[in-house]
Image 1 (tube, one colour):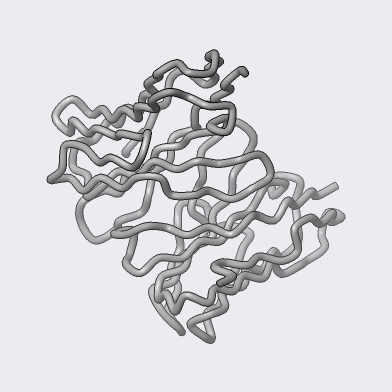
Image 2 (image 1 turned 30 degrees about the vertical axis):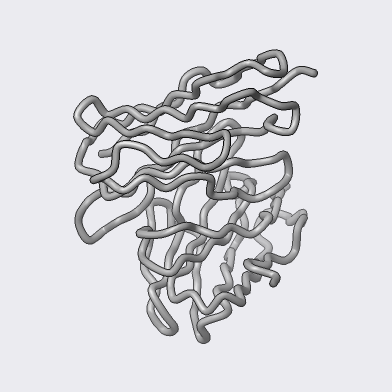
Length: 113
Length: 113
């Protein structure tokens, strides 16, 4: 049982480049989330989704986009990467909207130079 | 706006000690509170989930308590082991429809053999 899988684990981008962080879960969870974690800080919510075709902004959505075409996949796109987007990104899923246990992927470490 | 604070930021104890990690939050209108463990370079693993109507939850050597009126939760770890070394984060889910978790910045625990 893979749970939540994120790719890539590491990536270096140049300023202005774009990329997509992939997230897949095999638990048939309706709710999925993208967080970022900066050093010594808690996690901040970027975007979340309550089901296929439905997404909504979290606390820090600027500079990011998401889509949810299937229950399993929730990719996060960075457009015009900036140094401020250097962070560790975590994808998570749950059975309810923050009402139950959250399952996290192992993270994607992104550096923008 | 909900704020979650975890003090201390780092804690070092000898193996076998019982210890308490603290989490405080500013808004007592919460739906639930979760404790997570994060190992270096890894995602978060949910340890305990306490609903707002509960006072405590136990899992093995871990016991989490919740006092909504004072805005506090504690995570008690009995007979600590080197394998307990990790960062422990708490997160609260607010009441109401938004239900976006607010995370603390974590306590980095080191258990010395």
